[in-house]
Image (tube, helix red, strand yellow):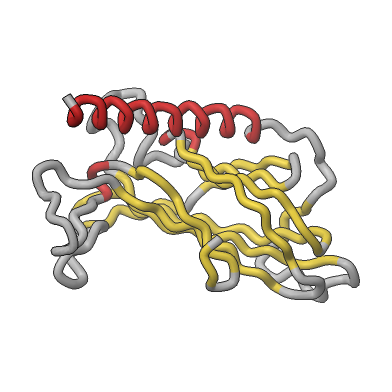
Length: 196
């Protein structure tokens, strides 16, 4: 009975997390303030007083298109990364590349045949505190964080995927058994080398 109650509580927690991410994605997909940041070309040049630059990068891997359904946009150019800063939203397109890589080490969650995405965008915005939302709308995953950007600096925000676990391969502390083939379960943000 205790196991059933524990499983039920865990299931409700997961469903609540999905509902919260879904609502966060819906709310963050619309721009309510168009004046928070401007997108930069490769090199934004000299940063004016009171401003800062933010470079967002992400690399992740998904399965090929059409594996699970004809409407699945994984592995296509329609798969986007959502970014919202203080109410200004942008959907970033990735550079796609077919990739069939062998494992790098004992266990590599990105080993195998799939599609590699590389997202990159530089923004200029006012220095100081900001509320940022980063999400993958197709996977119903989003995180919201408060960040503070220093005036005159070039800040690096790295988005890292956490993949799902392979079924039947869970061994605590032995090694990681995650794989991109099991989908992206969460994302983590690192600002200037520190997890936020």
